[in-house]
Length: 148
Image (tube, rainbow, N blue to C red; front, side):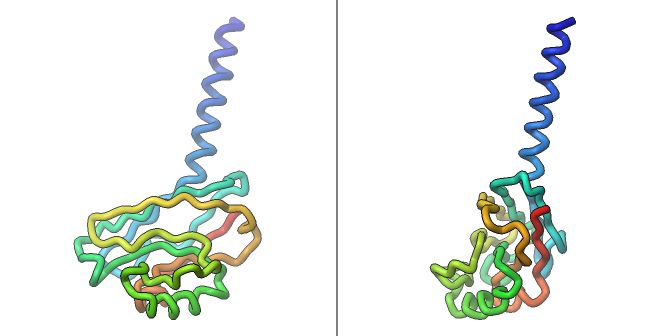
């Protein structure tokens, strides 16, 4: 009986650890339109890091309908996007060395995906928005990111 209880406890601990890890992993899908599949994302405060995968399920190339995922404080979004347009495609339409960019993926086209892992340290309680920095996309292609 003790062995059975020990095995049950071990199995529960393993499942709990896996569930906690999965809560810190997000997938965002996009395609040949200027839209993410989700208008908001959240992770629990217990996540010290978040792993985010961006999937472009469309067929258009990165040069005409490229997408990325950029995280910043909401108050910085417009300025980052405007400066990013001037930075060009080689820089994923992001101003290089800008500390206001809290996390970002590379720019991808149809059929591609990319994954990043970023720290949540210092982000809880901030007004955060994620957006696509491809020129013109940021005005409609954005959502709220919260740490609960």
